[in-house]
Structures are given as C-alpha cells and as structure tokens.
Amino acid sequence: MAVLHTKAVTVILSVTVLLGLLYLSQYYRVSLSFEEKWKTVEAGSAVETTTFSQPGIDLHLESPEHLKYNQPSIVHGRTDVVTVTPWLAPVVWEGTFNPFLLDSIYKRKNITIAATVFAVGKYIMFLKDFLQTSEEHFFVGFRVDFYVFTDRPNEVPKVNMAAGRMLTVRSVPSSNRWQEISARRMEIIQNLIEKKLQNRADYIFCLDVDSKFHGRWGAESLGGLVAVIHPGYYRDDRSKFPYERSPASNAYVAPGEGDFYYCGGAFGGLVQEVHLLAKTCRKNFEDDAKRGIEAAWQEESHLNRYMWINKPSKVLSPEYLWQDFKPKNPEVQIIRFSGVIKNYANIRPN
Ligand code: UD2
Image 1 (cartoon, rainbow, N blue to C red):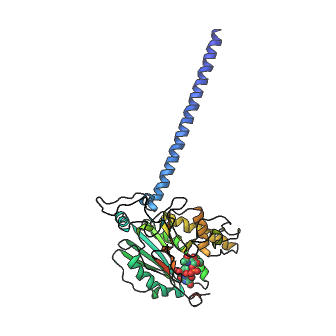
Image 2 (cartoon, protein in one colour):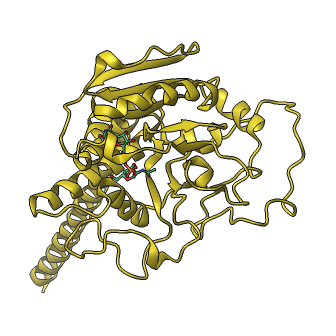
Image 3 (cartoon, rainbow, N blue to C red):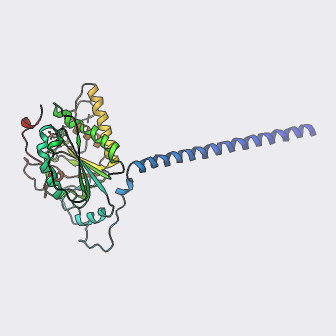
C-alpha cells in the first residue's frame, strides 16, 4: 500500500514538473517571438527612418507662439465647392487655408521639397517659362531642388534661382514615341528617389513641363499622398472619366467605381509615399507592356487606378493644374498652375 502510495506521489510530481516545464517553454517561446517581432518592427522602422524622413513630419503642426492672424471660422467659409473628400482628406481651394499661417508652420520644419520635370525632345522649349515662373510662385522661401530630365542637357536655359533653390540636370534617352517618354517617368522617379532623394528631400512633386505657374503653390499642398483633380472632368459623372476600361490592364477601373479623375501632370507628397506610387505604377505598366497592353492614358491611367485604391491624403483642386485653353469656371477663383496651349503635331515625336 505504502509502495503504491509512493508511486502515485512520484507520478503526480513528475506530471506536475512536466507541466511546469511545458508552461515555461511556452512562456519563453511566446516572449521570445514577441521580442523577435518587436525587434523586427524596430528594425523595420529603423530602415524607414534611416532611409526616409520621419512620416511624422507631416502630422505634427507646430505654430510659432503669439502669431497673429484672422480668426478661423467653422460656420463661414466656401459653400460653392466641396472642401473635403468622403474619406476626410482636405480638398484645397482658394479661401480654405491661411497661407501666412501655413508658411509659419512649415518653415519651422526646415523641409526640402524636390520637384521633377521632364523636357525630352522639343519639350525643352517649355522649360524656361516653367522654371522662371516657379521662382515666382512655387514654394517661395522654401528649399526646393529641381531635377530636370532631358535628352538635350546643353539646351537647359539659365534661370536665376533664389538662395536655397537648386537645379540638377540629368540626361535621359530620347524616344520616338511620346507615350513612352510620358510613361517612363515613373521608373525614373522611382530610381531618383532610391538613389538620390532618401534623406535629401522630405516631399516631392512631379510636374509636367508644358505648364506655367500663375499663382501661389505652397505649403498648403503638402501632404502624405497628394493628387490634383483634372480640370477637364471635375464636373462630370464618373462614367465619363477616361479611366482604362479594359479588364485585361492593371490600370482597369470598373464602371461605377473611382472617386475623381486625377492629373498625370502633377502629383506628389512625402518622398516614401511617392516612391511607393512610382514603383507600383511602373510595375503595373511594365506587366501590361509584356502582355502588349498600353493603358488609355499611359501612366495617368495607372496613377488613377493607384489613387482609387490608395486614397490621397490631400486633394488639390483644379486651381493646381488648369489648361490655358479652358475658360475659367466661377468656382476657380485663382489659377495657380496651367498647361500652355501647344500644337501636338509640332512638338511630339510621333
Ligand atoms: C496628359 C497629362 C500628362 C500625361 C499624359 C498621358 C496632364 C495635364 N497631362 O497630358 O501628364 O499623363 O496625358 O500620357 O495631366 N514629354 C516630353 N517630351 C515629349 C512628350 C512628353 O518631355 O515628347 C513630357 C513632358 O514633361 C510633358 C509630359 O511628358 O509635360 C506629358 O506629355 P504631354 O504634355 O504631351 O501629355 P498630355 O498633354 O496629353
């Protein structure tokens, strides 16, 4: 009986020890994997912060003390236009922001804004006006680095630039198809960000060269992912938007889908956001090309597909890219940037 009792005690003790060991091993496994995961997260964010500027740069808005400006109102303001999207991104129109306040907030951040512009073939003729007017209106008083991509580096005009503004010229091959010139921009923007802009710029805007600045384009346009509403379609039903309509293309937007029609001629945001956009659009464009598909409006179609899924955190009204041939509509109180009238047959290679 005593032997049986001793055996039972031994069995119970062994089981308890085993269960204890099992529990401890589980505990260490869980805490180890938590630590590993944490390390991975830390390593991930370390990569993010060493390669790109802090995403928080866009979130913390510190104003100087005792700044005097007109009292803002939440009951009086523009009523003729919509100033917020259904996903609560601001839509920037004249009269919705205080430029003095925004400049005061963003100047303290000591930011650098990069801007890319392509002037391939005869489009070099537009560069002088583009650069000259940008000196008058585009992020005046901020550090701006322009990157001009051209096949005619010797024809880049000399433009006096204010202190803190810089122009870099990069050679790109010419092409006998305008569609290719336009579409290849995404690849070049992706490479520029990867090879040059990490840690050198906080925001980037990618702009069409055949355009001029006529009014302020400044800190009010800064945001994570920034899209500009196309002036040609903003009053239309979405069924009229010239999205890519073939389901075979990676740029496909189905009937009844899509928010707005955005411009390929102006977009931007935080460098890491634009990097993701450029990388994705380039990949989708190249996948299409391998299957013999070219979307209706090349990279503009891919950009529209991207922005439908990845909602822009700031939307710029058509004030930020008008077209000179279009009469001004009453809701457009100021034209800030506008495409010049051009004769496609004379300037395009095909
Ligand atoms: C629209 C878009 C443009 C692009 C294109 C579709 C706007 C205002 N414009 O304009 O961004 O999405 O449709 O492909 O949203 N370029 C050269 N050399 C050339 C041809 C083009 O440098 O021979 C560059 C240049 O920077 C130009 C840009 O590509 O501004 C777009 O080409 P575009 O202006 O001829 O395209 P467009 O007017 O059809």
